[in-house]
Length: 323
Ligand code: AVI
Image 1 (cartoon, helix red, strand yellow):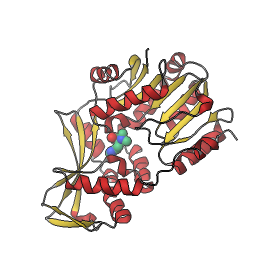
Image 2: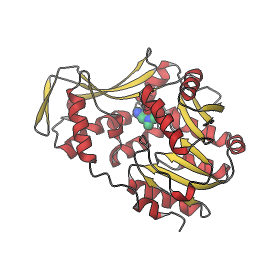
Image 3: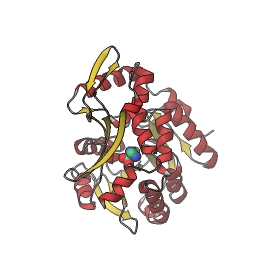
Image 4: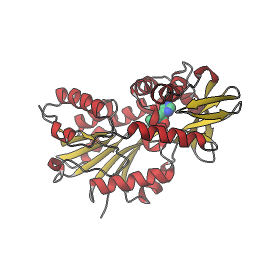
């Protein structure tokens, strides 16, 4: 048994999650324009839909990043200190971390995610294939400060934040995350981070408006969740998925557009929608290499290497937290 359950048992419980969801939904729908946080996409159904998105022919980020991590594994291994603890911020499918674990010699793996059950399942799946690796799952919101397990404190640290999840943060949130990660990992730590790049707008449009309608179901799932968990009465057929590229802000925006004038009730409150009114559900920022470098430098990290695919669609960066 190399999954250290003690780290899970000691992790705090998040009893306030449903009420945080409720107050964020009430606050977000009271705003003009209405908005909902993308973090609420990821219940079990939303996470499954996201896995389906990663396999879509139009959705290039996942397969492109996997290709970079596979092709550049030997170069990444040369930069990373042997015996380091690999700390993954958020734990999704294990495909990407498996590539790093195959190419580099890590002393421990610390996956961090708010969903303890999911984390535990992933950790055990990985343990079966990497029997020599010590795994210390930590149940925590990785956007806020959390403590690393005592067993890895003395090891060099390497953060891992793939998938361009950074792009779902507003720029000030992205900077706060990078600063917080530096604080958690400590001076001298490294970070391997995946960042989606600016590109032809049609490619972006198609990636977020796929022909099979999976992204639309993913977007609408947040309304399904509000109905199920907060007793909402959203009529899903009365909202349409729309993803548009906002050129000035370098981001794909996902919206749910009300197809008609209507009133929705959630937790005893009424929310009126005009025909055509939007709920802004997600921004996915796309960076140039220069803008990402400036963001990293302004947040306490020094870029030491970066890799892209031959078409310049996606980037992976190695950063170091210099004293
Ligand atoms: C998780 N995140 C990086 C995805 C993205 O591309 O922004 C979420 C997503 N939204 C629509 N499709 C995928």
